[in-house]
Image 1 (cartoon, rainbow, N blue to C red):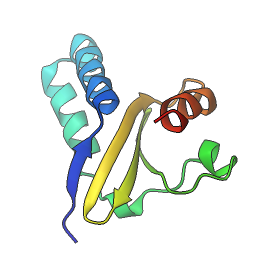
Image 2: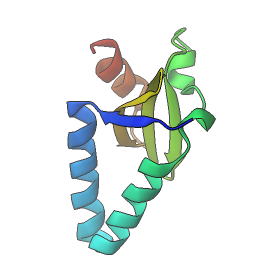
Image 3: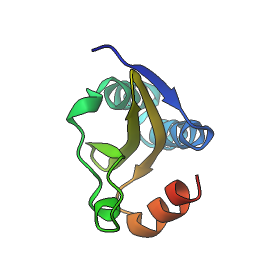
Length: 102
């Protein structure tokens, strides 16, 4: 099933920040490759983030491109991306702030 991928404003900022960070450390070509890998991953194969499952929220999924985590929901034929973040941070607090306030 083909999906249309949509990015929240927060996710767009995350991707811009991620691009600048990777490009600054490893070059623009590496940044492009990593972002392409993240964006082209098959959305239905993602798992429920453990930080959200632990508080009873199961409608979100995640994909990993170490250390980055992409958090999204599948809504019909749309994939709505809410964030692309470094998974080494305090994800419990981050996800509660970012997704529960949304």
